[in-house]
Amino acid sequence: MFNVLIVDDEPSIREGLKTIIEWEKYGFKVIDTAANGRDALLKFNQLRPDLTIIDIRMPGMTGLEVIEQVRLEHGEGRFLILSGYADFDYAKRAISYSVDAYLLKPVDEDELIEELQRIHISLSKQVELKLRNAEEDHYYRAHMVEEFLFHDSEHGNIESVVNLGLSWNSYQIILIEVHGQAIGESLYINALKGRLIEHFDETEHGIVFSAGSNLGILLTDVIDREDQAIRLYAELSEMMEECNGLVYAAAGPMVKEIGEIGISYSGATELLQHRFLFEHKRIMTTDDLQTMISHFGNKPDVSQSDEIELSDKLYYALDIGSKDALWRVMEEIEQRIVSIGRSEQSMKSLYAQIFASAINKLSNSKTERNPILQQYSSFITEVYQQVTLKDLRQLTIDHLSRLVEGLGGMSKDTVLKQMIDFIQRNYNENLKLELLAEVFNYNSAYLGKLFKNYTGEQFNTFLDKVRIEKAKDLLLEGFMVHQVASRVGYANVDYFHSKFKRYVGISPSSYRVMEKD
Image (cartoon, rainbow, N blue to C red):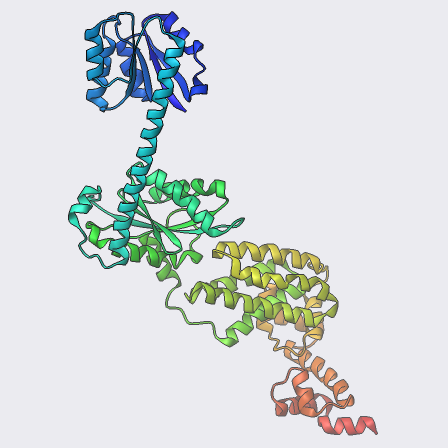
């Protein structure tokens, strides 16, 4: 649909032209009218109509003078002149201004429609040509950027850089990682690329190009402040709303020469590699990288014993059904995993291993829990599908909250009764008072005193006695001494032997012989 401005000093002519023609039928829309030449110039500058139908004789400023001024200021504009005078001189001047038609008043409806149809064809071809030229221009500009980035063009063709409008004061690369959900990600990328080209190339704010599975923008206006990073991210997110897609973007450092844009590209690439740990809704900048390196880098790796301890804590928190304990443990797991500064996949893998180990222990401790726990096997798969640490955290909160609720949540028993029940069910684990104190959020020394006052025995003594009582049953069932030691939580058989003799008064073998006799 092409826009039309009608200019005539006679109100009846202006209103008559608006009503006698079915404008939309012929691909036009009247957007406004003007009563004189000066009003026409003002509205032309504001509205930039595709076609102006203008009276040739008006008081103050003639139609030809309006056309002449428009040509001087804008160099373009399509005009159809109306005149009540069959004056050859006017016609000659109109032709010199390249008007599209010259019609005499009173206007013949059929003649006007014929001219509108002809002008519509011409305007359509003009739009098609502009689009084709814009596409070609974008292709060459994007191709040159890709040449500098990916084909070792250290200096490039300086003449082409100037001709294509790439001779800027500064340059900065923005890299965009796209994530889709409903349809193939390539469709998301193509949809976003079209919007980016329209937003940046056609407004001459940047050049959009392809960068592997990502998209890139070579910006003319450098992003170096947080408010700019927030604003650009909001623009990118808005472009993807219709496609239900997610974007993550990073800005490389600013450079002064187009031959140095590879430096900016490398900086943006390194930033995107840390996208998993970045939680702000804005473009990542080089300052963010320094912050993350100083916060997360140079920390010792998580050892196997650390992994076991973390999974044990998670298991304990799940077993006692305390959400408060659970969130404390999950926060510790997250901080510990993130602090090692490894790759996204490595962090996810370690996270999944800890969770799987805790769930397996929980399942083995009470078989009646299995129907509830089986539905959480899919959680491990979902861990690897999360795009950021923030997403993974929310996934964990949702799953574990439902799991604790499904298991019955926190009982009404006291902490000490829960500890005793826990020990009696998990005597074969490597139980430590310090670990349980962390789960229950107590000082270990204070919890030890409470435990002794409640049971009359030290924590380790109570645990030993539970284990020895279970060992008696296993010995009478026919298990070998070393098997019994392992089953009740003693890794060293000699240590088990000394403990058994201490509490029972005789060796495990003697006990079995005596009880069978």
